[in-house]
Amino acid sequence: MSNVEYWFPPPDYRFDGTGSELSIGTIIKHPSRPTANLVTLGSGSDHPSINLPEIRKHVEQDHVHCMMKETSLGARMSEALMNFFVFGGNVSNNISISRQKSVASESFDIEVHCYQASISHETLQAIIQLPRIQAYVQEIPLRTRPVYIISGLRVALNPFPTERTLGNSTKATIGGSIPASISFESKQMKIHGQTVRPGAIIGFSVHQIRVKKTGVVYAELYPNKAGFSTSPSETNSDDEEIECVPIGPIALKDDTWYEVDFEEQMVEGARYIDFDGGHGN
Image 1 (tube, helix red, strand yellow):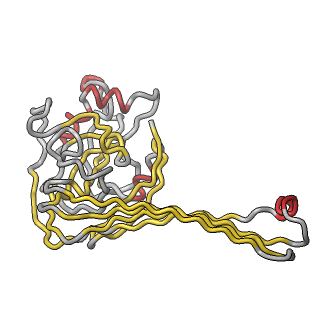
Image 2 (spheres, rainbow, N blue to C red):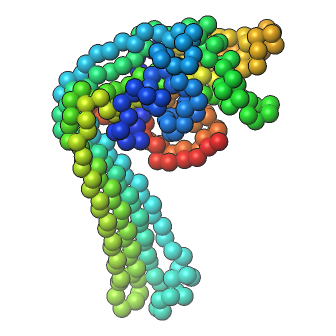
Image 3 (cartoon, rainbow, N blue to C red):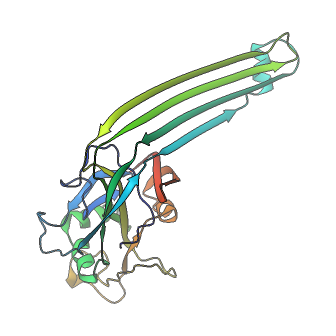
């Protein structure tokens, strides 16, 4: 599990991975809702008998955290509707709405935490037999849904200043065979600066625990004939197998329980998935 392909930014920088939220071994509903935890595993948890792999740590120096995102929406109003408001002949019009979001920081060092080995078959079986997990995945009759385990963290080692910018702009142009064209533009910008403390999480990774997809081979596979049954006595050779796989854009789109918009970004050589919002059960 040490080769993480994708990271997710935290909701904010107040998490340090030492509590029940955003800590390695926490089972969550979906990476877009990282604080919606179902069960916390690992040292000091309520399930000490579930053995997770050892955590490997390594330091990356002179890290700069910069992310930028822009969402645009363009539209054209129908000619009939425009002529209702503007007298004259043919009318051309354009309306565009855009939203910008960016995060920038100065250089700092980070420590990467990841499991140094794959989760064992026995551990995976113990996880899916937990009552809280069983209740969640079987909440809808005749269907099971996946859960996610936080499998890696990127942690700031020293304080660093960061600047978060949020902006919105609207631009409209109306022209054509009328005496003059009309243009309108509105911009709003909000800048928030803060100093991020040492130990703050700047990224986390997850693996998905789900029913094995037929005919697809993944890098990490943990079969379990128990499936998502409620007790080992109910198992048989025909039950569905379970797998634990690293998460990327394809797996997120396959999770139909959550409707989320996201985009991929490169941050200092690391691939991030940034959610634009969404909802699920």
